[in-house]
Length: 260
Image (cartoon, rainbow, N blue to C red; front, side):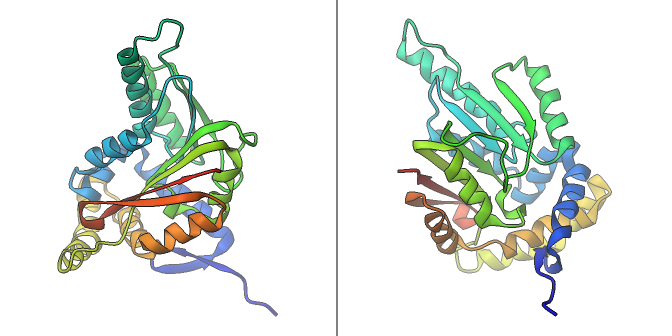
């Protein structure tokens, strides 16, 4: 009898069919503390990384953008704001200042948090839907850009998520991913490992009463492919001109590709 297939859940191997539910529980637990979670994991630097990510995307008015695993809206709000600012700077008379952004997240609690934030900001250019990154509820060839920030390492089949990204992009559309990655500064990697694997779960217990979710999030970073290997996965999914930019010595990295 063939053994059941497994998937990584942090440092554990779990039955493949269970990973999605386990990840769902983690993000339901941290949804209301999403900014706090990322502040703890990056010492607050994630805000600068997200700014750099959206700057590299360089969104324009009239674009259709799909932001996957972006339930709380951190990336979508930045895209909307920058597209408007760029449009105002071009003084176009018959041009809308809006990019049309769809946030798709598998976790309903994360989406509800994003909807609440959008209402508080008065942001109306964003559509919020629930859906799986491996089977997006989006037609083929419809998006000018696909973004995913700190989400792809939680997907059970990363290759399927990358294939879906290519499917929904228009020819000429852009894939852009921001993810925790492999530290490439000698010595700094050991310090970061000690912090994230030992200190972070304790902080999670103290400030959120949830050590296990934070332990998983730290461990999942170690199981994610390093920069060069992930770039090869993007190419195998059919995206071209793949480029990588490290952030803060490789604690995080941005991967860009294009549907040609």
